[in-house]
Length: 210
Image (cartoon, rainbow, N blue to C red; front, side, top):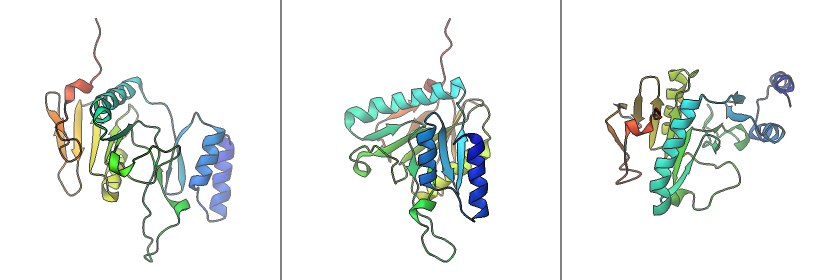
């Protein structure tokens, strides 16, 4: 489907009282593998490329996490293309929604403990990551990013992080706790997930070469 046929299909779905499903997303992805997409409340959201700085910050965080996680076999670290099928939510009458109605989201950086995903999958995974990170791009608004983090926390993610390259801050979110804002010389630790690991926030910012 092109963008035009995508919206035509969207119109037909609305006329039938239907919404996009994971099957629709998979079909669209097969036809347009260059698109990065999420499925949010029945809507397929197509995301464009990130700005260079945001992507470099994400790559550096993945490297730093991976250097600690992989040798110790603690789990799996993934980037912004890894799709997570979120847990089924209850409907208003208390019944669970069908699997096709579930959301599929992709944080910028994720960590899943080894005991929760013992073997990698050649597919989307049906779980929430233990750690999820969103990195504000040049065009992003903060509110939707915070809402996405809060959703993951409510569904079982242990720690959510928002990195804002504009303000040079890293904000740590935990369920039912006040956010913690870290700046350049502050250290990020995740004792409940990665005991012993720490990161000085300034390590994330891209270097300036002479």
